[in-house]
Image (cartoon, rainbow, N blue to C red; front, top):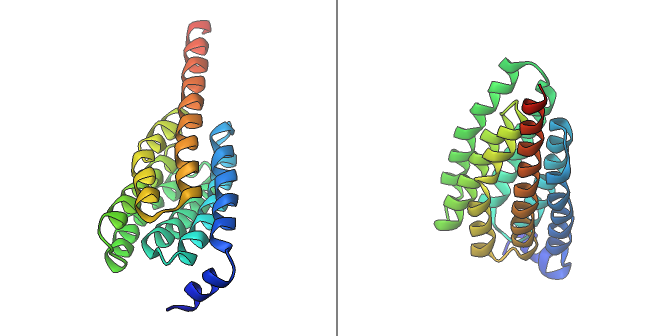
Length: 181
């Protein structure tokens, strides 16, 4: 039994971090600026990484930390495309972590969700960013189902619904702008 397992049985911290991550996950799709979205995702990834670690779900923890690091670099990159493209370097890191923490289907689902989200973060266009990130939702939902992360599952489902509505809002706004121009 690891010290994190002992800690998680003495203090129910995993659900607390999961609920904080859930709050962030419900908020980020409502944000309209790339910088705000990335900042929120750093916090969300940190909370979920802690939750998964307390649950002994190392693949989930690993990909969350890789995602948080990639979000930080994407945020710092700003308008520097060359620095933004460094995000591609994190995909092999996520794959290596999946290999090192392999536990079957959960590892596959966590890594798939992480890689799709990372590809989304590298998009400069907010509409494209949202669309690519939404493709990760079924994998995140599957992961949370497979490991029993109720807060993460709730967040993944609700975030998908809110994200789809935000994508629709962006699409309509863009269409109106094109007609007006």
